[in-house]
Image (cartoon, rainbow, N blue to C red; front, side):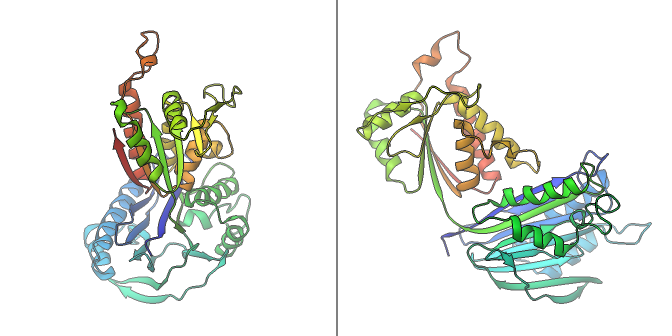
Length: 391
């Protein structure tokens, strides 16, 4: 099952008038054994108090579940650690847990959140639920084998409350969410795109003024996809052939960034770089074409924009998707790295670019390295497996 990858993505809408979200998603990325953990916690109420409660709940549960501790221990620990509301005498936080074992078995553990939706072959899959009472709390548990293409949609109650008293009488009830997901989820969509699509629908039902914190967290079972990105030539020219050989020995897709790097790659492949002069984005240099390479772009300016997109994409923000349909170099890199890739190899040359030594230019070598470090950091936050090669 090593070919399977647990891709996750989530989006949160903050209750109108609040600054902090009372929902929190905590992810423990897939390890070499194929184990993966995602927890969505919904804190009581909204604002700062709810944010603290959901943060503590999600962190405690995710850490314990990831360490293979039992659900009894998790619930008992939460009950002993966090307070019960003195006014309402109700739970501090509700939660949904998705735990994958060995890349093929999943446990769904749910407490008072809307039931997790599972799409299999594009249609709703009704899984069995076993009810247990632990520390006075009714817990629903499900255990079954995952399949390639399965989509798991966890949500806070802000989703099913969307539109109450506004665009809908009774909110966006679970059957409606299922129908919408079955209709709009496409096989090629990433987990983040699915979460964004559903949260966009919630925001519209709330008429841009969410009446509750609203979170959608998605786990998608997909095949691995490797993307290799090269930027910058080697420090030592005698290493050119070796580095190019290593780069093209990798499977998957290939991105080449920078004029000097593109020339080296084209020479290695015994071809030429074809350039375009049309600017699809006034701030992003045009892309080029090299036979044998999936994408060829300019270097530091383009990478700067990629990192900006990465920062937004890696957050729980819902305002990130404007680049998904664009064709400029930065947007195309973002689509390949963020939407398509599960594993990323970064090949980073440490040679100084003579063009960047001009005192009239604001670009220097340290900027490139910092951009790559930031990109790697955000890719890891997204759950990608990243390996950086400096040469």
